[in-house]
Image (cartoon, rainbow, N blue to C red; front, side):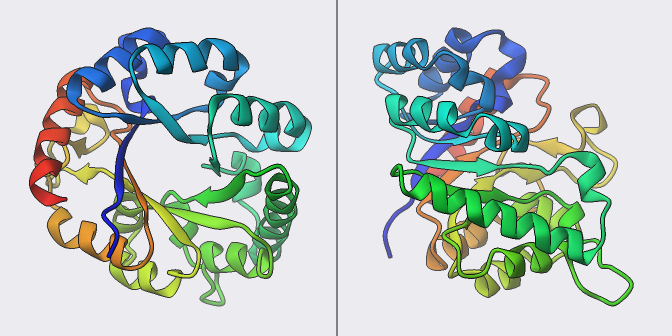
Length: 253
């Protein structure tokens, strides 16, 4: 089994300030890989220089649906210029998430079509889940299943946010196995015990919460995750979170 690459989602470090401060914190914590957000591609030349000056690599990035729909060529050009090989769409617009099973299948088909266009330019496109994809419709279908059904036959892949799967009431290990044929990456974050860290949206340092990351790391790698991306949606101490989570994961990898 190949040892996955360890990265950090720069969204976790946004409260530190601009790109330079985010990259400094990532590098100082020990990371050599980072995952960007959509706005980082607005100036790919600056991003490339900032990464190189810290000996960092950005193999992946997140990108919103509006940019994919309306500005795909710019996105592709920027990703190629900065060395990003995989992009992940992290959330449909709110109003589209409230649709039924057919709407989720249509969303999957649309993402699959876009994935095909990006593949022609050497870029892989994947979907990144939250918890709402596990809220079953009245007939028992899950939005996540409907989205992947709609994308069937396309090159769309999956970045599993394992903590969101757990918070959504799913069985992360079973879902990783079910969609192993799509899994390429996983987000590594931890959920605090009930009632704790409410000012951090209930998240905590990796290894300090209720998720068994020793087991989950092995499972994700077993089912195909080749990049593991550390994340915290709202840390009070972003730099400390990055450093402590990196140190913990050195014992797990």
